[in-house]
Image 1 (cartoon, rainbow, N blue to C red):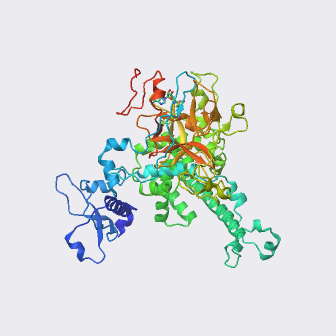
Image 2 (image 1 turned 90 degrees about the vertical axis):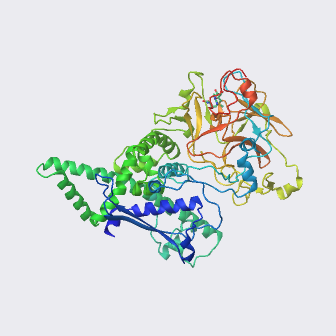
Length: 609
Ligand SMILES: C[S@@+](CC[C@H](N)C(=O)[O-])C[C@H]1O[C@@H](n2cnc3c(N)ncnc32)[C@H](O)[C@@H]1O
């Protein structure tokens, strides 16, 4: 047992890896003896051995890990067996990037997979009659818009092996999710908002209901009115918020503590040179044990994780710690994939994380004052006002990236399209009255796609076609950055987290106008009007999506509250991938350029088209 405890987490890692592997592989375990077992378990043990100078292994010396895995839930009745080659022991030790096989569960999917050509031209094909034109040039840009349907969220099962995200990928995606999530990382969350002290009953009498924050809300005697529920929501949000801020502070302080611990050893070694550094280390360590009131083992275990926090911070900066999700604990505790390559990837992320953190959470750096760091914001303004580099170079302002072509370049980031009054007056040409007038009884808006009620009030809305854009949560910039493409396409869009098939990437937002030609403009029509979305000087990030002959997104029309919108919808995008659209033949016909998408199916790789 002692040996197992020494190699902290090894049993856990091995057990988890094997369990995950068995679950993912959907293996029908067919050991003859297994039917006779009431509750089958798999016992895995690891031994530390000396291979010695010869080829023979010495007898097993010390068991360093032992773990049991429950097989009852993993066993599957069907005869299907994974096509994966049997895994070797060394593969199991590293669960990252394991191959996976999925079994297809419908005839349609099987047919889809067996005919890859047909799959490539599935129901996602898009109509030809919508166009968009290129900016600051004469040729026409034609992004294709599917007016009939958009990719649905059907899970695509694949017979192909699928790489699983590694622990590092999970850590990185977790950070991006936190930065683009709803947390407000502001020290105020603990100093102003977190008033947990129970109120006296006499206080409650003097406090307006809205300020009732604590025990009275938790008590079973409170009335269960909508008001008290809403107060409880606010209270719970504040506590969650405050606790999240405390977690960030905890990690940055622990990372800083490791630095001070090492500094302390150096200072003492320099002051008392007759004692060895090892002895000084031990003395500093014991002093810390005493101050913390922890045993040596407790402190050593904690330090191993804190050291991980410090290493992550050294590579990816303080923002990575402040916004780390749950993944960081696992990454630092088990250190799976915690290697030079991981540190290089984290270093390349540093500036990009800072751009997102500074622009979306302007107060986050104030937390760093606790560990004596500067609180000055480095990147101000809109998150898409900065162009980031995948190789970790310093981000540059968007404007700077266009000055060579257009020294008057200016772009205003907006969340909602603006109607060009000089073209349309007070009219909105996107208006799309529903054909079925019965659907408008009671003044309710019914979604033409899902048939459910649409409303900007989340309590009334039942249409979840694009919940990140309409009717559900307030719009905020999605986990997407404008990045400098390495292959000559100037800027592009990179997905920071994955976008499942059918998820909205964003609405094509710009100036709603008409009569513009030879510019960056998309022509769109409803049964009642032809209008244009012009994104040259005003718009959102969708303006930076590049073309690919094998795009991972498409534009589709969608009607929200009787108003037509153009939505960029994912066809399945992995975290870290460039978001691309198919601009269509008409666009490329007018462009004196070769396509740089690099796909084997590229249709425009030469200029003579
Ligand atoms: C809507 S803009 C996309 C954003 C653009 N890359 C930028 O930096 O502003 C369209 C322009 O991007 C470039 N572009 C987009 N996709 C491309 C591709 N596959 N190959 C070459 N150039 C591309 C072309 O210059 C095209 O005119």
